[in-house]
Amino acid sequence: MKLYAVSDGPPSLAVRMALEALNIPYEHISVDYGKAEHLTEEYGKMNPQKEIPVLDDDGFFLSESNAILQYLCEKYAPESELYPKDPKERAVVNHRLCFNLAFLYPQISAYVMAPIFFDYERTEMGLKKLNMALDAFETYLKRTGTKYVAGNGLTIADFPLVTSIMCLEAIAFKLDEKYPTVQKWYAGFKQAHANLWAITEKGMEEIREFEKNPPDLSGMVHPIHPIRKVGTK
Image 1 (cartoon, rainbow, N blue to C red):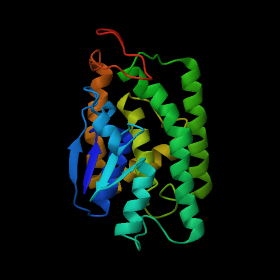
Image 2: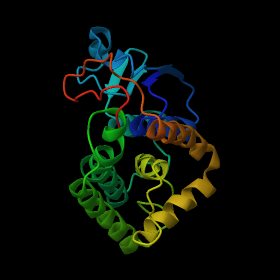
Image 3: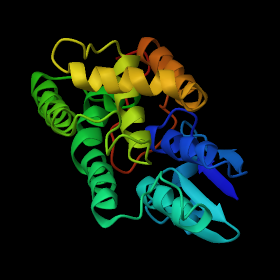
């Protein structure tokens, strides 16, 4: 099994945590984002969306990190509580995966990641959208009152949400006062699953460094995002 991934991207880190949690051997093939290796024709044969990560399971190529998380459990650990079989329990896991994909991470990506890697600014509107998403996350956690995002046991839903919140920690965004339940869950995960957190922590350290010293992507031609001029932030 091969995983084409970056070392600091939240979707890549979420899949790597799942592979570790499920004890599935794999080869991590690093994709050089700065050199636009994900935009090449060769990479596009594996993933026409040209996004990261991509799983190669003996010639079966699968993109979209949520789909990869679900596939790994269904094929390699069908009895694992990481992806419970009970319809209602699984529905909550699926909801949290969708919530992160469609609602939370897009705001985190726009506010944290885009200004680091591309020519975007952090704005009051971006902060407002981010806080709206965090408000919803706080509400979900308060309503369930559980240790993890989809119940009292760890599930694959925790992985992408941890990697999303990690981006906020990387830029020293404080959760404590406004989002104490999110902070408690996040801190609890790090303490209870140090081996999994170690994977994400390395990515966070890279993002933290890029926040201080943005990478030079001036050589990249991106079809969607405007490239920041060298020396600007």
